[in-house]
Structure formats: C-alpha cells, structure tokens
Image (cartoon, rainbow, N blue to C red):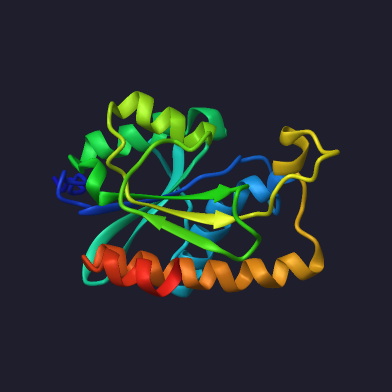
Length: 197
C-alpha cells in the first residue's frame, strides 16, 4: 500500500505573509497592499496561492535558493496573527524568518519602509501578530498607501480603492517590495533598506 508523504516540518525555511482582508470587495483597497504584493510575487514565480492551510491561502515557492511559504491570512486583518503563528509553529520558523508585508498610511503611495523589527505602528494586523507570537522581531516591508485626508474616517480610508495615478505608483512599489523581499530572504536586509527605504 502506498501512502503520500506528509509535508514535513522542513517544508519551508521562511515565511512571507502579506496582510489584507479576504473578501472580493476588498481586493484592490489600500488595506490589501500586502495581499497585492504577495500575489504579484507568486505570479512572478509562476505559482498559485491556492492551498487552504493555516487559516490562510498559501503556497510554497523557491526564492533566493530557499523554500518559502507565501501566506495570505483568511482571518481578516485584525486576526492576522492566527494564520501567521499557526504556520510559524508548524514549520518551526522564528519571527526573524517571518517577513510581513503590510500597508502603511503614514507613507505616500509608492513609498516603502523596510524594518528589521519594531512595534506595530498602530497597524491592527501587525498588532495581532506581535500579541499572539509574543515577539516584535519580525522583519517587515511597509507599503505606502497615502495619508488619510482630514475629512475621511480611518476605516473608510484604508478600505478605499487607489486612484488611477496611485495604481501606477503602487505597481512600482509592489515590484520593489518583491525585489526587497528576495534580498531579505537572502540575508541582505541592509542592502534592501539602502535600495528601497
């Protein structure tokens, strides 16, 4: 009798988690910059993020010579930590090898800010990841989605769509974020920061 070999704990050496909200209505909103980036990276690597596991959609790819789990939590933004910590626990991957890609309203659209670690910066998805893991040692790529205009409610702003001009700026940022992610996985975080911050 033949048994399919189970996925082993060595099946991934690194995690790249893009944060966002799973419903179709949120697809191209500011809060989904993390999802947009991970989808772009998967396309670039000719992979499909279509496996349901760890309360997320995920797939394993090879990037920078390493096996990397691409992860899109399906828990909604505020509970992103459930998916991320479940995958970390399964593969025994520490926070230092778990790259988080998220939106940042303090940065202009198209700008990136790469950090080795740090606080949640007021971002609810990051807040939940830090809370559930008990660590703030996650490298992260923050993608600028524009500052909230005075008259806007914060929730409405992050769930709004990009304008046509902003869409072009976002595309450049997403490409740069994917290149930065590859450098980070290759242990060249300083180079990524110098090039893209």
